[in-house]
Image (cartoon, rainbow, N blue to C red; front, side, top):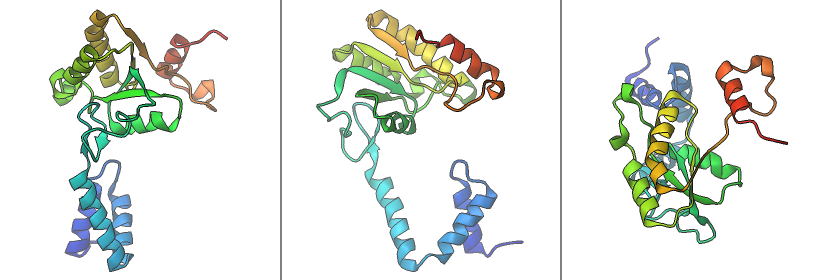
Length: 198
């Protein structure tokens, strides 16, 4: 079935969003059509406002509405530790745990030669500058356990070694509630590698 042009265009735009396939895009578009004109106007204004006002913190490259994000300007944070993440969504995931009280550095991507992303395409130079200019005692690498994450971690470890600071990495392994027989080999290997003494 072919949809009327304006609806088809809306579906097409929803499909451009990550993880949105044709069925979900159609459901979202049909939902928007059922919304009141006032709700749609508010929704479109929220999109425009977010696009116009949200930029990046000049220190850590987290998303922010000002030059310095809320985390960098929070004096209660431990300024001697930097947790390096790939994207803002990773920072948000760590913040939700309420366990980490240091600063962050958002690389805004990971090294991926296959996608044409090299070290100069992400915020590595800025990280090195921060470490050089501040009294940083530890850098925590909290990058995804993917090929790109591994490549970026190895590259960063090599660059950070001369600073003679503590370089740590978040542990990887089995999620709570997972049964061993259903875990993949890489996850099991990382769980064994990252074992702790009890």
